[in-house]
Image (tube, rainbow, N blue to C red):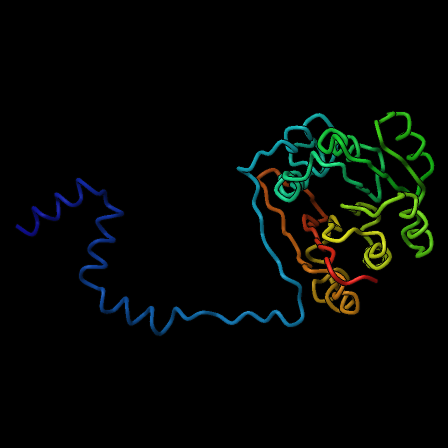
Length: 265
């Protein structure tokens, strides 16, 4: 009778589920002992790091992902060469405000592919592109994008960062840094951007290295301690996607800072 019942279980539920049924029915007492004594909640030390979230957008094909297929931008997991998966994350963050009239900056516009991507996505916004190379500024201007403005910026110079951002007559809703990826430059950009960020706005640092000591999450925390009060949230986003491809770099991480809605500089 028991054997017949076992075969019926096997036929109805398959081998895997039948094994689970047997395991829980006859060994429940021992499993409970294991769960009580060995499956304990682990403590997480967050005292010297910012928050961090891991987002896999492999199955999150957004509007921005589709637009990115038209451009050679490494913000997209569909780029032919170097690929990050930021388009899904940006759509997740900004899809509710993408049709508003915003002021958006990209620091390090390079060959203008990211700017063209944003121009198609943020249709009603003013875009500001910055780069250290005059030749890239000149080439970008030839694309003649609507309501898009370009200026030189040296991200190793505090006054130059401030002077560049001041070209926008209003404060920014979004600033994205895709420039040198040098740690000290990123910190300079963050600190010098504060007066130019609207309340509730976003400052995003792209392409943070995962396995370089000089870009450790603890180092960002220590270097930004004095300005944490100006942001309601500061957190890393580790981007995942089946098409991510950044060999030798391993820099598919963002640092997101949300401007405080109360405290002014």
